[in-house]
Structure formats: C-alpha cells, structure tokens
Length: 271
Length: 268
Image (cartoon, rainbow over all chains, first blue to last red; front, side, top):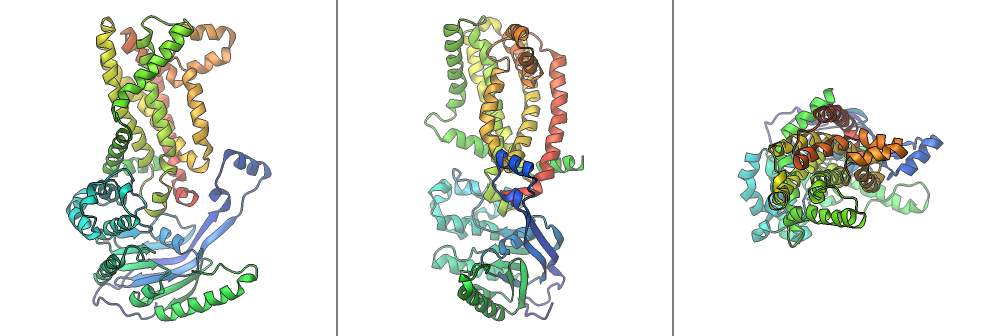
C-alpha cells in the first residue's frame, strides 16, 4: 500500500489484516425467512432464489498502528466486511489473513442476558468472546470502573438504560488488549463524558500498535482519528486513501446519489 | 468424523461458557415466579394429580398405585420435552449474538439440554417424598439405576436437540410443529399406560402399536418404570439398544450441525 503515517514507530510492518479478493455471497433463498411451506413451494418450482454479492473483489491491508475507516452508504457491505474480518461469516471467495488477537465490538451488548446482573454478564460475555477466566476476573473491577455503572453492577441488565448497556459493552470489548479491534458505529453511544472517555480509550489502543477497523457514519471520527479510509459502495471498494480525501469523495457521491434519487436503480443515499 | 471431533473440541474448550449458560438458565427459570425453583417440584406433582384424576377416576383404567406408576414416566418426560423445547430456540434465539461474535454455536443447544438435567435432579425430591410417604413398600435397591437410565435419555435428548436447533435456524416451523409432535409422542409412549395396553392396541392398530414399540421412549420409560415402580432390573437389551442408536444419532446430528454452522450468521 502507499505510504501512510503510522503513529507508533518501530512496530512490525507485517500487515495485521490482509484481505485479498474477498467476496461474500448471500443466497437469497436461505436468507428469506423460511417456512417449510415456502421451501416446499420453491423446491417444486425449482426456484433457486438467486444470489447476491454483498462484497466482491475487496482487497486491502492494515498494518499495526493503523486505524482504517470503512465508509459508504447503507447497505454497501460495511458490516458484512467487519463480520468477515471477525470470522463470523465465511468468505465465499478470496482470503483473509489476521495476525494477532482480534476483538470485535460490533453492535454493543448483543450478547447480554437481560435477566442477569452486570457482573454476571461480564463473565458471560468474556466466555462468549473466549477470554480466559482469570483474565476476565482480573479485569472485572477495571471494566466496572470504566463503564461507570456504580452500584447497579449487581442489578439485572434489564434495568439498565441503553447508555449504560453500551458503556458496559464497550468496556468489556476494549478490556482485552486486542491487537486488532473492529468497531462498528459504537463511538456515538453514551453521553458527552463517556464519548470523550471512549475516544481516549480507542486512541490509547491505537497508540499501543494496535490495528483498528472502524465502520462509522460519523465523518468527524474518520478525519480526526483514522489515518486511512476506504469507501465501499455496493460491495466494491471505490476508493482508498487519506481520510479527508475519501470523506470528500463520499460526500460528493452521496450528494449526487441524493439528487438522482428519483431516478430508478440508484443506490440508497447514506445518512 | 473430522467435524465431530471439531465439535468435541469446541465443547471442551468452551466448557466454562456452557457452565455459565447452564447456571444462567437455571437461575432465570427460578427467578421468574414467586415460588421460584419450588415449581420444579410442584410441576410434576400437579401434572401427576391431573392424570390421576383423568385416568383413574374418570376413565377408571388405572394400574395399581397409579400415582407412582405415572410419576415415574412424567418426571423424565417433562425433562425431555422442556429440554427439546429449549434446544430448538437456543440457536435462533441468539441471532443478535451470532451475528456479532464468533464462537462455537454448538455450545447453545448443549447448554440448553444440560440445564434440563438440573430440573430433572430436582424432580428426585418429590419422587423420594412420594416413595417414602405413600409407597414405602416399593422402595428397592434398583432405584440406584435411575442415573444410568437418565444417561441413556440424555444421549438421545442431545442428539435430537442438536439436530432440531440447527433445523430451526432454517425452518422456523420446527418450533410450532414440535409442540404437537411432542404431545403426540407422549401419548404414543407408555407413560399413562403400561405394556398390556399396547398389546390390546396391536390387535386393532398394528401400525400404531409398532410405532410405540420402535420409539426410544418405549424402552426408556419402561426402564424407569422397572427401577422405580416395579423394583426390578430394566430390560437391558432394549436399553443398550436405545443407547447404541442414540450414540449413532448423536454423531450424525453433530455432524449435521457443524456442517450447516457456517451458514447461521448469514441466515439468521
């Protein structure tokens, strides 16, 4: 890739993430909400349902110390890209190479059990993420302090506000010292104070020679804090480069799309 | 076979996750209601009362010591039907998590089914009470074989639960269908009636009688009844037969689960 400013000097230049020719195909037949009746009907009609490529021919790499922003309109394939990097979705074609420990922080608090307390949920989330038991126990107090849940930590999660839930999710996911951190639209959660705190935490992680991939619609984050960006539209990488450049390009293109929105077949404008 | 070994590694490496899930499940089930876990004791007893009223008073068809006769079958059947019900939704109910975190999904049905073992163990309390208070003459050393019969049942339940959990991701009808299928299955198993009734059925409905005898719960419930109610050794050949079939079924179910697992995140 072209030369990029890397904040942490002297770290390894072997890419932390290497994606080559990635393609993810969805079978429309399977993603429809199936009932036996519709499946039988499809079988009888020999309807294979067709396919849809959420991502195609996507290649890029991220070195340690870099934070890459992935931007693009809704439905461009950004979340699919993060899911593929996290190993949640298997690529249909192409390769993904990951070097280092990866933590994904997609939508926060997805795995929380409403009936359990905050403390129990920390243990459960740690077990889902595959974090060592001793490690999660050691970090317990840090997580609680960072999330700023106070005495509610022993109350059931269902009594928490959405902000508290998001804070707890963020605190768990960033507590593990990942080499690679995947973030999906999480930075806009919480109040001003927590936003500042989480920003600080993410910057700290980035400084510690960690690679970050961030999906966001908040362009301030992209320019302020990522040192490279890629623009994805309809599953293809349209452009790659300096964040300012890519944000400008994205804004110009979505403005164009908005104007042409009345014409059929245009992509939905990003919000 | 590689997939089956992989599944074993998944379960073993995430045994702590399974333990947490089981503990969370038991805790939740106890927390919902006023009586909490006391319901695990009351539930089978009340169900027993319903069937005693229905069968021995209304239909006048009861066996000797009918309360114990059916309690020996209600207890394991409740375990089976609720474990299968929980297993079916164990994967599809965690759709948000599955799309966000990479973890071996097989832990979900396994944890759902193992949580049922706790409930079954609680059921030993009313069983012991029933035996001591009302049927002390039926207490026999054969009672120690209950865990062995339960093991056979557990293997069969795991097999069916893992399979149903995977299928329900693709066909949500499995949930609706299962309620009725389980109810029919209960009536086609020797729970409310004994082997003698099946012989009578065989006279007029050969097919139904055959179905009852082929059903793994024919051997399983008979075995429970032998050790709890009759105080004799179970029909070992039938029991080992069910175990052997269940093991093969379990391996096949795990293989199928692992095979379709990569599709879960896309389909859910």
